[in-house]
Length: 138
Image (cartoon, rainbow, N blue to C red; front, side):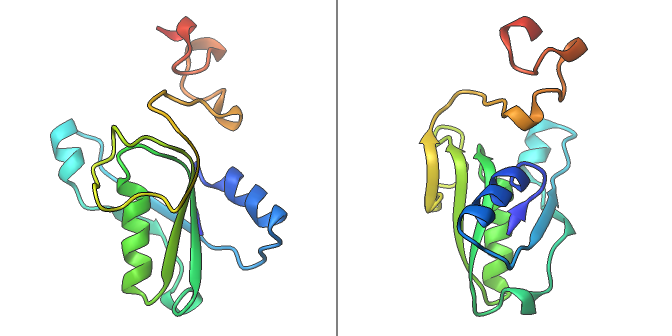
């Protein structure tokens, strides 16, 4: 199950490399009003597959980065509630930012506390084509 938007590219690459043909997508939104309220808010599932598509199955959940861990953990909990067996996979895991001390990814590419700008998001958010988070955007 790929989490939009960050998990679409790595999830697509993994599905091709591992010959996975059963692909699912989850879209989760958290309000981003005030920082304190945002951290305490419930997730809104904009898109989520029916339980019968993952019930009784091992499900690889893919996202690009685990920062606070709220999004991927919300997806994990929903899969478990629907009778599935989630395994969590991210490219980058940030244990310093996580809000969860008893949950972490089963698979990750690297541990880092750096802000990562992936090649597929290079044009997002920066002033006049400058990638967000680059030294030129500060």
